[in-house]
Image 1 (cartoon, rainbow over the protein chains, first blue to last red):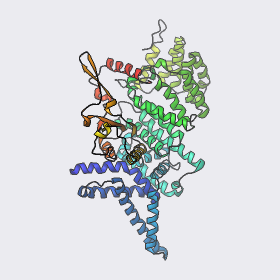
Image 2: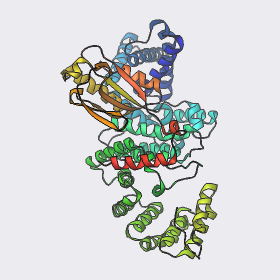
Image 3: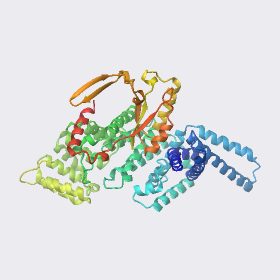
Image 4: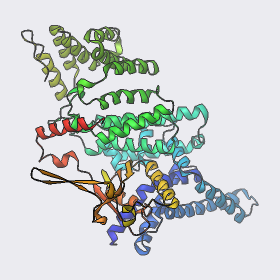
Length: 427
Length: 140
């Protein structure tokens, strides 16, 4: 194999292995920063040795053994210092044997537990949400600082600093390394799911004109979701979240038109939907439900997305079911945004007047005053109810709240379609 | 990037020889690894070509040909669909697969076309028609 091929092969192996390496090493040394350094050291060693010796049969195990040896060297050095300082009469060899035994035990245990714990650490509540997202992408998804910076439209030094601060915060908080149990585990898992969904939405919000790497965040989030369901196969909400992301992501290609304009669900070309992803998403949702998670917040949202995914045409959409799912979602996660979507679903299932009725209490809420989707939905309901002058006013109000030219044009087009003389049908 | 990884047929697979318990276990373990790595989307084994059919096209003519088919090495005995970062990652994972057959065998990795690859070829009308077809196929 030529040198560059070997180099590429080493880097690919490392990319595949690094999360597990760092996870196993973190258990040993209880410090993600140090664990990452040890993993990097192993990579450097591989880069210098593999071109001579060839890629070993089990490259992952080779990297782990190399990193482990480094870890033992460090621990031994730390012990020597400790002994010097405290003059503990403990035999060095014995100490080393203890470490080796501990490290061997750590490596023999299910690597999945280590990885899950590393995810828990990266998403630890002592870190800010930004730091959690960054550290998860760095340690679990294996993105470089540069890739993360580009994805979040930040500079590399900003991201590098965020990572090193996060590592320091974790270093100073020894409890962060304890595997969570019981209720604490549920809370920590909720934080993990939130971080993954944040990453997904960051990518989902990016449109066709944006840097591809931003949209790739959707892919990274799904991969994280798949890893999580693989190593925590009894967590219904992990499956619920994955199903939600997969079904939403199945529409990525269909939601932006040739001129970069947003295309709403009913107008999307369903040929552009990723049907394999929908299929996988539906199976994942079924798994969440089978685990007793049908009323989880993510599973309910996935079930709603699935109603669209199953519909062959927009007209086939099972709106009464979607309306019923929103009724349940509202009970699990009450929020004005859920209520607004619920109003839309009810308007589709039971007519525009039903939607308008559900909008009323929302309009009174201060928090919704400048929330564009509210007047946009209201305009749509009024239009469908044949109340054109009022619909026009609502669309114009929505357009005035928009900061995006394509969106504003779309809303103004809908306002113009309410012209009093002759209502124009929607394109 | 999405790839299909095809397990090429061998004399054994064409004769319907089932994998022994050891291979079965090794393959199960490999599949588990793929799931835990978050790259597995789909995968399955295919019955021998003796149970397959071919439809040959020649202008308006269609001829149904019964299996088995001769060129064993070109046949597919199983497949995965993986979502990977790039081809290098797909190769690395494919190398980790246990030999899927008792004797020498081959995996073939083929990237999926993406919509962007068709941008110049497809008119909106074709995309639209393609969509109606797929809609009918879905939900079987």
